[in-house]
Structure formats: structure tokens, C-alpha cells
Image (cartoon, rainbow, N blue to C red; front, side):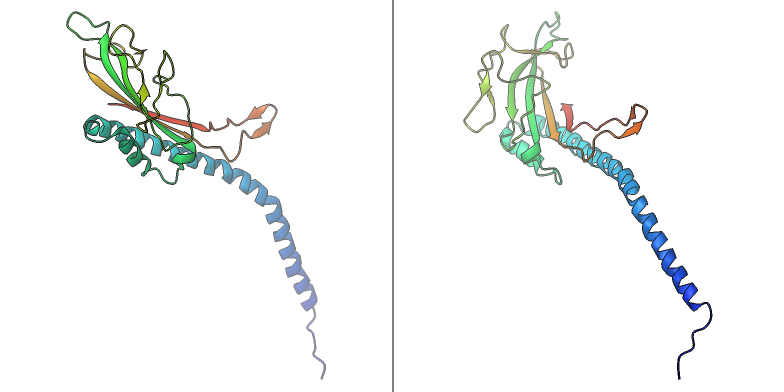
Length: 216
């Protein structure tokens, strides 16, 4: 006996198919917009995470250096710091500098308010990214990076008139007082650049160069 099809069945099926087709078209239209909105948020979150890691590295590095620099080599301290940085790839995109500053020049009669001079500087040996230190650059005035594995800057003049002077902590050190500056760098390429919104309006692009510094 032939199956009887109720009136209107075909129209309901066709209606459901049409509805599914409309949903698919709407999703295809909305998906690029959703992705365009999600990527900047993800990019900003990545930058915030990386910046927070660098801040922690510089703070902990300054603390460790001030307490353990006479006990452990600087390379050991810097390597222990980079072990705490995942998911950042510090070997490929990061660098750490430690600069030792001493109050020496232009002190007042009481030996205070001195200008700082560079006593030593160290660069992490495990990194392949070499941004310039914002405190002082080894390589000037006859100095150069040592090749003995210590990562130290060699040929820095002894404390005196020829010593390299830094503006950091100017007038804030006493004669002979030591301060350590720890700088952490990271290069992180943004997933997207500036978004053009039309009529000459564009969103600011995130900087790929991240930096943190702590003085102790």
C-alpha cells in the first residue's frame, strides 16, 4: 500500500533546509568579523603576558644579583632567570643585561649626591637577540665583550675620570655605593598590525620590542 504523505510535509522540509542555508551564509559572513575582533584582543593579551614576565625577571634578577653576585657567576643568575620565562622563547627572542653602577663622580663634600659610573656589565650568553642596553653600551671607549664565557664587558676603566658615566641614578648615590641595573628585553612580532577603520582612522600597532628594567 503506497505511503501517504501529509499535506505540507515537503514545504516544512524545504523550510528547514532554507533555514540551515541562511544560518550557514550568516556564519560565513560573520566569521571574518569575529576573527578580526578576536585577534587584536589575543595580541594584546600576549603582549601583557610577555611584559609581566619581563617585569618579574628584572625584579627577581635585581634581587638575586644584589644578594648572590659574590656567590654565583652572573651567567648562572641570568640562566636561572630565563628558566622562569616560558612560554617566552628567550633563547631566540630575549636578552638580559646586568650593569653594576657605583657612586663616584661629582660627589658633594659629604660624599653624597654622586654621579654613577659603570663598574661592570654582563650580557646573557644564552640569547641570540642583541638589543642595545638602555643603561650603557659595552663597545664604546675601547671596551668589548669578553670571549671567555663570562659574558662580561672587558677593558672598562677603573674608577676615575675615565670611567663611563651614566645618567641613571644621577645624584642619588653615595661615594662607593653599588647599584645593580637588570634589563630584560624581548622581541615579539604582533599577529596583526594597525587596523584601518576608514577616513584616515587606524588603531595603533603594538610594538614588537618589549622592555623592563629594575634597579636595586
